[in-house]
Length: 591
Image 1 (cartoon, one colour):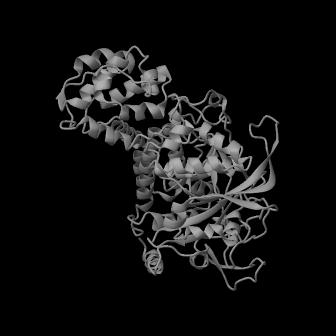
Image 2 (cartoon, one colour):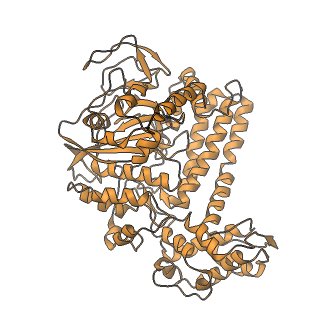
């Protein structure tokens, strides 16, 4: 932790300890920091005209019109208030209390509502839009930037953690291109719910503090088919340690702004990678190595819960390797490596089975952006680092899926056992989430007898495969013995099912002494029973569009405890076969 952040955090902790663990809104605002400062504060209702200090360069042009921007990281851009009434739909109590140190009672105040909807900006605060570029669907798209998002402050909480607050859907900026700067209720509900759902699944992510809806009309052609419809404008207050992404560096490299790129890199390293010494001549190489390994880890985590991001452009890939920019995402239902949640992805570039490859593509673009700052030796080392991405990804992927299957220790054929199961799931279209969950709940005796109770519907689907009993035999063998040879089993079956040669000899594992109850407890703690399936989100959205937000609140409640069986979730059918109408459900980039 940096000294300044530590001091601020200690001061905040002392304030929170004075009779309460939370602070109230005026005190919160007094501690909220802006990226830029002014020679004098503007009077209420007016905008400042002279920027005198900033951690990173800010566009000197303060008028808010769409343009090409150079030689800066941010542009000043004020949120556009809604014209109609605004309603606070939902808040994350944990984000407010544990990240922003706020007492949840502040959500009942008009000041809070105006703050989170973009209606008012505190005196002296300077909202900003970030300039970045990116490769979209494999091609360089030039300048992109925050086209409908506003950074409204930086907060250091009582733990010394620095969080950046950003409104999404809050109006036009210089980077809006042809957009109107708004977000609709449909997409905002999805972002709010999924940000928090991913956190409780244990996946690094931005967080969502609040969701506000208005009665303002926003027009969208949801599926780009000429059918423009009226929707309602909404705003999400989202928070992250940083909103910098691969595209943040790409735009500077493509524009030849190398001094500024170096300044931004040094700022990111100093703020977010404290273990890297700023005096180290290899600091950019170390930074790249961290991003490569953490990106591999993140995508492996996505795969472990069947999550497809939907738009894995370089402008949507965080330099801190957290999940950001929730758009046409989807949690896979029937296991299918070709699953594409985004109907706008005509070439299926971002199908779930290609996410690891796309991660490599994005990291290569990051390397291209860094090359002008590296010497010849560092470039060679950086190339070796990115070459190691695939092995790092598959190692982490295998470890995650071994845990999902309840394995302890090392087994030389574990990867094949995982691949065998996934092949059976693909052939039978077994539900991804519930197959692993029900393997966590069923007993070994039930599996051994191939007695699959009706409640384990996903396993019943899987059991229709002619090789299911063979897989169960190998699975139980792996669970029960500490030392064994699978040469005959793998020699005959893996060649047919996994298309792999076995040739593995005696292997040592360490499930010895493990009990079935321990296995089930271990597996149910990492295999969720509930994820934010698109049909569940859609059900909540349809209600919300009729001013009934009970579906949003129910999902918010359930997804905070995805590993625990919940009666309200069971009653809602969240662990059952998806409804038939869900098969025709589509999501797109329109938001």
